[in-house]
Image 1 (cartoon, rainbow, N blue to C red):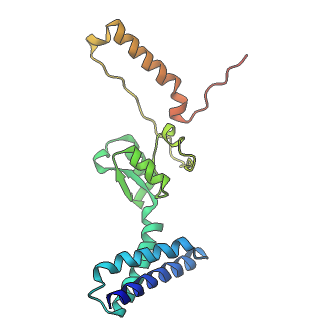
Image 2: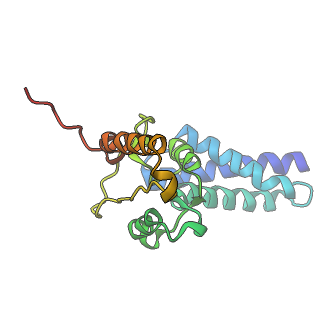
Image 3: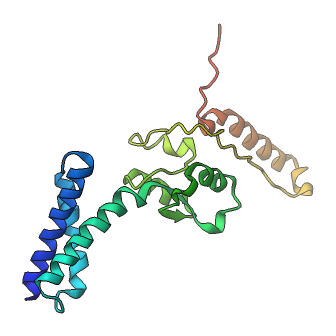
Length: 192
């Protein structure tokens, strides 16, 4: 019986996902059918030894509908962990997302980049980081662009030594030259 209900729930979830997608988007997709089948397998596995075929049908329908909703509605925004709510990029993202909510919260830009590259939703990333991922596109928001101050901290006494002062000046010059890369500005064109 466990094998039969596993097959029933898997097929039901695949068909449910297909019909929901077909009804909402106008056409089903093979990826959607496969996603529904996986959702059905995951949903029935803990219950496969305890339900009859009717229960498998119900689990399959629920898995197909809920997982489709999760993938199409719930996943639309990626953001920073709540512990970073004080950061300007988190406040900016919450302004942009409004009541939509955030589907993934992370305190690591690499995780957000990976999630965005995997198609899990929108992410606020530094231009210099996102530029290395050609599959990502910049999304116009209608909100004032996010700005972030950069601070170079050093102890006052150490900053007076010639070697440290040279390093500080060099880092400052590099950051000023790279401003266009950080802000997605075009570098000035040399005339002549």
